[in-house]
Length: 265
Ligand SMILES: [Zn+2]
Image 1 (cartoon, rainbow, N blue to C red):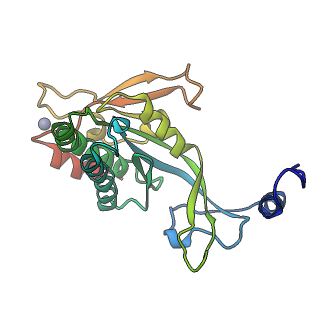
Image 2 (cartoon, protein in one colour; image 1 turned 45 degrees about the horizontal axis):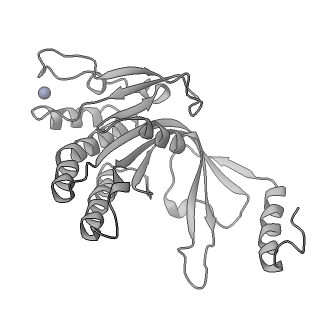
């Protein structure tokens, strides 16, 4: 309880109003697909949507803290544009129903029946980061940037929080995704080294296509692309096993593999 003498009335009123909304409880409706952003509720503050088994692909820039806005402003601006701009455009091209920029990274959501599409998008971004982003920015700035990626899949709750209109503008609102996938995918990304992709077992187990799991024979023979990683000792995660992918699209077979992974959902 905040006292009258503790905070000016105008701010106490905001907090009281929010607490009253909280006390009224929530109404949750379930939908099986990620809705258009315009369909995500904002009017009724108690209304949330629940979407089962959403896949989140989180891409995060490595080394961004070494890029300064003071001394190398143009190269820093260029690096952020190349990284997040490409993430948004590529995820869009893979028809992700929801994309957002988060700090120095971005995430894309995919429906529960699109695990292979999510993988194709992630590996495509990984390939871009390794072959274009990292070498170009390193050559221009001398900074060792990079990329790491996390993927998780679980139920989310979503609604818009903020003002529908504020002083004639509609930009003081954003979607809030509550639940595991976005934060777990971000934490999985944070655990990896440059050029790695780490997924939870509950997402990995939905990758049934042969080409999502096994390599082409360019390395001499076909082999499992993924390595099991024990995360049972890490309290950040609500699962015990994750899977790590180091490779990106093969120079000879990548396009063909990308198409067939996409066709697998
Ligand atoms: Zn190959």
